[in-house]
Image (cartoon, rainbow, N blue to C red; front, side):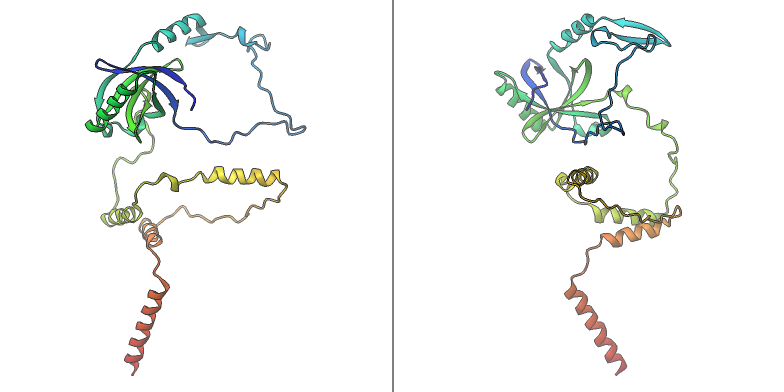
Length: 281
């Protein structure tokens, strides 16, 4: 597993040399853009908006636009020095908190943490302390020129670091448009909705969920590649904007109820038939 950051992390007087490894991967299918006529890849050249000339990488500088059309140019050496000074610092755990106190909206990216040279004992100490206390650590770290707030926790016997957004990076929920302020749901509708939730409640098993769009896209690509004919249904599903909430909830509940075994259905039919015959007699 590729190491993308090396450093150390500390809590109190305990210092732990660590390495970070990306814990997740993007499995999106990358599609190229081609010229429709000759099927050659399209190039995206970097050109100056003023002189219309193509710009070489060594001619490009970074700057901050503090007003429209006005920039402060930042020298690469200054940026590299600033980044180096902060990356060389040990990452210190600032606080310990309960994980349930952190809303999932703050979470960003996850990294596995492995022990660096001579850090096995300290690594194990932090891991066991987090497990026994039921807490997670809050720390700051600079990754790729950006200071990150991070949560340090245990996942399957491995320490993981999850970067989280700073509070000012999370937009306010009250700014979301068209959110109903008051609920006008009837008690019966709420009870039926809760019944549906109860019927659909199960233990979380991530292996049961798959990316159906990615699978279908890969199948389409493979079919095109091998020269197979791809047929797509042209039937349009009729939808209505008017929906009876109770009818929809009840239909959902009916769809989630387990189907009765054929033997049980057959037995019930026979019983009903016998009662009917006895009544007629």
